[in-house]
Image 1 (cartoon, one colour):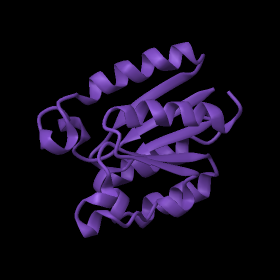
Image 2 (cartoon, helix red, strand yellow):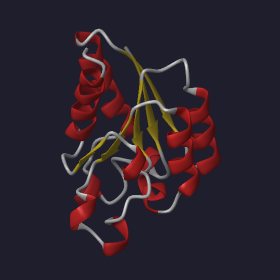
Image 3 (cartoon, helix red, strand yellow):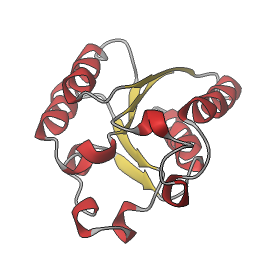
Image 4 (tube, one colour):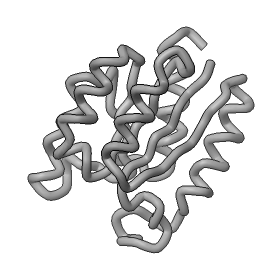
Length: 144
């Protein structure tokens, strides 16, 4: 099982930005925890982060034939990017939307996800554990 974890804008600042919302854990620390759990699940992962919408779109397109599942924290692009939505729909790779905070309990503009309709599911509000839950969901999508 090969899983691509894509992370959108400002997630490179985790651990330093809005700690009351996103916690103190860095993206590198999240990645290390996911890698450890993935090894136990006999899954290979690749972790990437970009602040650029087009780069995320390209990575989704390039994932076809290389990855079994995509886990996507599109961050702010969740609420604005038709391009990401269309890329997910185009490649046909099961995609899981993930968020550290509970976007449904936050500002009104964060409560609408443009990518949710083309994702197999959404994990939101469990802090850094959202990524572990997404990993486990990804493995279970294809029967482990």
